[in-house]
Amino acid sequence: MRIWLAIAFLLLSVGGSSAAIDAVNVYEPRKFGHFLGDTLERRVEVITSGNTELFTAALPRPGALTYWLDLISIDHSEREENGRRIYDITLKYQIFYSALEAKQLDIPSFPLRFKHPNSVAPDGTAPSEPSDASQPGNYTATVPALRLVISPLRDIVLDDLMPEKTGDISDVMRPDAVPQEINLVPRERLLWVSAGALAASVILLLWHYAIWPFARRAKRPFTQADRQIRSLQSAGAGDAPYRDSLLILHRAFDQSAGRRVFAADVPEFVAQHQRFSSLLPSLKSFFESSQLYFFSDDRRAAEDRFPISDLARLAADLAREERSAA
Image (cartoon, rainbow, N blue to C red):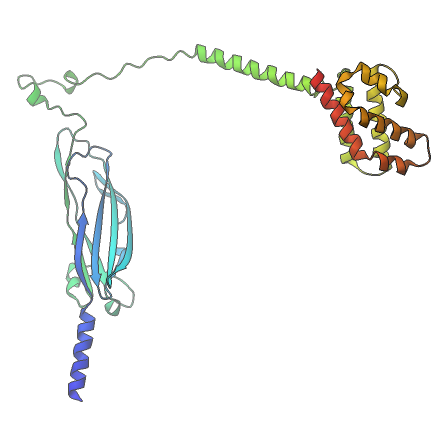
């Protein structure tokens, strides 16, 4: 019995100690040729075994690290591969050092803290002191510092260029470009011409479609009739819209011909206004239904023969032909 207990204890001990950091791989950017404002990325790959977990709350926070370096962002992810847990950490930095000559600067190192679930404190905190790394179940890996060569925006050193003269930097650098006044007169003229062309186009469109202030133009009676009939249709239903629509279209015919137009006058009207010749069958149906409506007691038959939808369509067709002729 004691032998079995000893074996079980050994197995538990081996299982508990299997959690470990196997490797830390750091993929660095180039170490030279960086300028003011440049950004660079460092990628860290940590391979762990067992139940080792990355304590994400201890990762560096984005912000200013030094007076010349900012940590812009930090991303981390984890994946499983061959029974191991791999953590990928990507850090993006930006340089704010304005170098007058090539200079070496170090991106500071930082620790990565890991934990084993069976040994974390009840409050879930990670070890905050380096000595905690020696406690069972707590692990720390260090990402080393990275030395960079920061290059100046101008590669001129006065002492090497003119050793016999102690001059100013303005003696060897090109002067600033002289600002030139931009002539806005041609652009202003083009703007006014464009605005005038736009206004003229709008006026022509209003005139073409007989819209205010040209809504009551005498030469567009069918356009006015089409607009009035559509307003009646949207206003309500019943007997009045059909009757009023008939009268509106009759007045449009009279105004277009300059006299009263009856059913017998339709061929003569079409002969004088050839643009309406394609609508001759609809014109005859309109006048026949109008006679049936006003001079018989069967108004329902007139509406069935030439309903208000056909009447509105005829008014729209007459208005279209009237505008195209103009």
